[in-house]
Amino acid sequence: MPSSVVQNISYDAEHRRLRIVYVSGYVYDYLDVPESVYKEMISSGSKGTFLNTKVKGQFKYKKVK
Image (cartoon, rainbow, N blue to C red; front, side, top):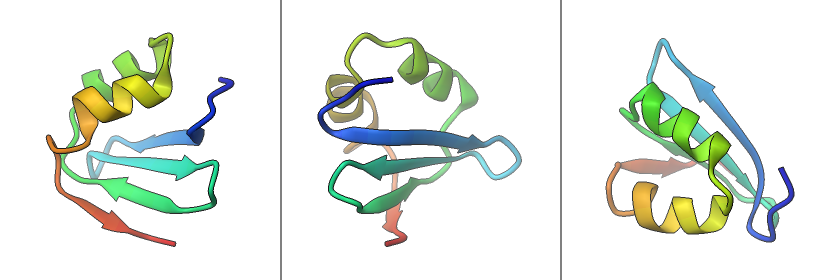
């Protein structure tokens, strides 16, 4: 999963929480994200583009670190 923006992606299906670890070290949880969005992001060619167009601005989030 090489990306210049996203270091790691994980998903908690029970809580519908998408966790994004950025290359910068910041960690954000995006809330109430359907599992289908997570699966689509994992298979996308550009994680950063997907994040910017399909996640940011679409879901509430909280900064973890």
